Image (cartoon, rainbow, N blue to C red; front, side, top):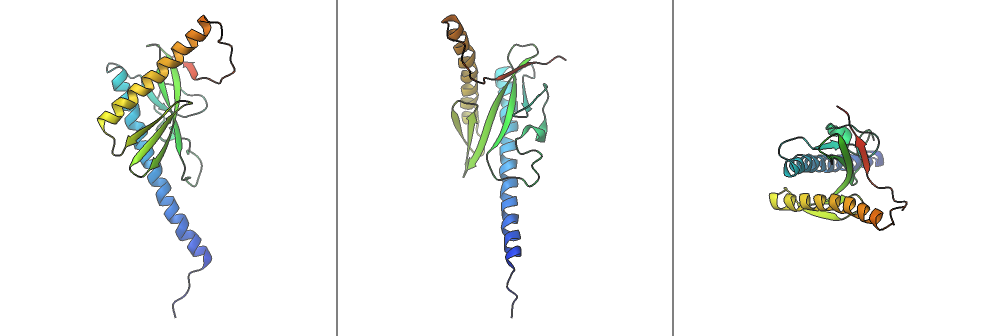
Length: 173
């Protein structure tokens, strides 16, 4: 007579499937993040390195953090959830970088990318140039609206709000 699997072995089997899916989720989001970082940098300025993959929170410098750039870093058992990362974007042509936080979630053959407190973009997997170019335009518009909106608020006397805003840092070489 065959032995019935224990409840613990059933939990272990379910955890193994979960682990495989969570790794797949991370790998796909990381691939998308790296493609966005490299492509956005090229799209903004093909002459210099102007976008870096950084952690979504905490201090950062102008460098690519690789796996440390993702919100699931250091969590032990890799969670199956949306994953955030930061893009440090050179905003002055000098050493001033703004961190833009992106959160990705995969649904079927689509990757949904939420940009900070702004809009959400839908990218088809595998990524294609048309979707990416549209995404870069959205990021550019998001940044321009942020700066122009703050200038407009200042010029019209209503810039004293309590929003959190972006992380802008001077990075000295």
